[in-house]
Length: 479
Image (cartoon, rainbow, N blue to C red; front, side, top):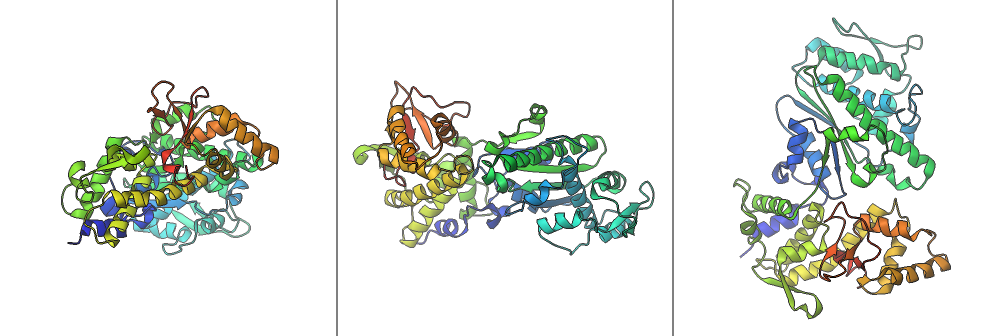
């Protein structure tokens, strides 16, 4: 008998949140609730932790008086932004004006589509922001900041009037920020306006280039300050202006600013526990089993697709654990990891005509998952450690998943002497690999106890303890 739930998971679970059915699969987390109902506007989390899923949910909400615009910086030419600074501000604040201009311009563009706004106001704003004038984000920003961009805004405080500009009366875009702010104060209604910033890590790959990386960090610092400034400006106005920034935690840690501690009131950190992940998986499996029913308890949902059996692992496979824990050992406890692993299991099982995912199916997928995790780690770590491929090869050469610092140092120095790697600071390499949970520590006395950053976020690498490779990399590194 065909297991339709397996078929649905195999076909519909995706790594990329924007390719999924958000309405069906979005797990209503406390983070999303905090953004919508409270003042949270900085969403910080690891790659694969679910930031994009929350982002997609925010922009696809179909509720009265909710208007959203996503600014996606994927494949964005960041060099086009670096020259749009405001010389009146010192570093790292020189881009605050740019970000406020983009946020205000997008709110005004959303006001054009809001039928609760006075029709005369909408008609005037449409001269600046035509409804169907859809361009890429890069082209839109270039247009809005060009000397030729369209209009002088007259008459705030009464009737709004947009007059076409000519060469003799052109106002620089920097000077239009206050005008747009006044328009929002004067004419905006009590609807919610979400301006969502996503995929801001595009220029992170150049982080080793000191000059461009400094500009990149200044740009992000200015964005956080612009959002904070806008929140404080509109806090008592009755206008619900909600800019929301999604950013990876390792990039957020690069921002050093005297105001950063004040951002805590606005910040949401995405962290996953085993219970929270089980709730997420139960929700998703339940939706594939019967979309109209309430989510099942985890055990009930899990047993709709996984066979009730213990999975062998370790030397000679004599140790046993349940299927969830076996899969969890290969992951970094991120939703993306589980979604990819379970989707692979469902596809493998369904294609072979079985009703339930069994041990053989799980172990078949485990090797492919190991290669996936290796690729994920390379993509994530490369901007900080460009030689990450060589470091993984060092682990493969050692041919053990558990070794001491001296063993690693000896192999590392061989590569250094041969000129295969250039980074001389081995402490920096080890600390970074630990921070990305590529490696962990083995407890000195309890040999079956391991410490990884994703499980113990406040811990640092311990040089007196053995180094252990994350289990999910074993097969990719042939350990």
